[in-house]
Amino acid sequence: MLDCAEGTQMQLRRCRVRFTKLSHVFITHLHGDHCFGLIGMISTFGLLGRTATLHVHAPKELGPELERQIAFFTHDLGFAVEFHPVDTTSKAVIYEDRSVAVETIPLQHRMPCCGYLIREKSLLPHIRREMLDFYHIPVSQVNNIKNGADWTTPEGEFVANSRLVKPADQPRSYAYCSDTRYIPTLHEQLQGVNTLYHESTYGDDMLPNAEKYCHSTARQAAMVARDAGVGKLLLGHYSSRYEDESVLLQQAKEIFENTYLTNEMDVIDV
Image (cartoon, rainbow, N blue to C red; front, side, top):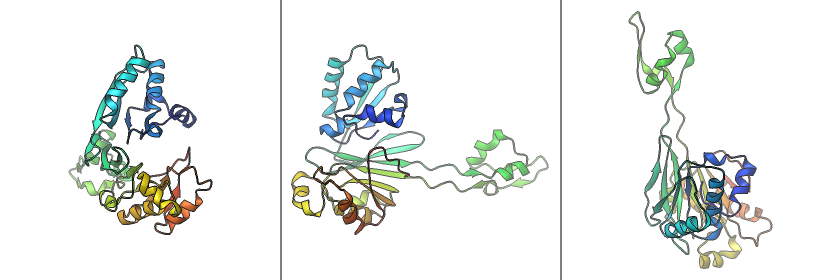
């Protein structure tokens, strides 16, 4: 989960996401609209009988406060909350497993803040089922072949691995850049990302406010997407002064055509 605002539990239920599926929460910064839902969610997990450890990755300042809140609001929680302090000023891999790696993206806001870049690890090639059937290769050998093994038939015929597999899908990547002023060099950290979420609080008419409050305009978000050569750009974090966010979309599309507005409950193919 990226950030945990008020209402998170309600949205999880609306999305029919099982609470037990969640194991890691990544907080970008300590403004309420990005972290006020965390302690409530932790409390609910305890009431539901959770036993698995919940990992929270966030700026180091949250650690002592989260510990106080857990001690004050929860009793016999039943599971561990493991806090991982994040250095928001440097680019580093802070989590990885067999499938993905999560890397910090230093941002510039009114307080320490970073985004997160999630990269899928290289995938294994696809098995050519017709070749397995033709050579009567047992299912027990599928993983070996995916990992590069050749095959020799009982009659001694050698079958190269390249004939048994098809190329793997290209690994996907998603960058989440929450609250930040426009950073002209940010694109250097986002080269070739499949999907970029970049805050777009204001339109061109409110550029002075964007600079004053360390936010970005939709046009500036599009400039980052264009310069990084990303696949698609997602806009969000709109100022409430815009009753119709289509003006933000229009301004961004003038710079980067493959841009979309995000809305609650959207499901987006990375």
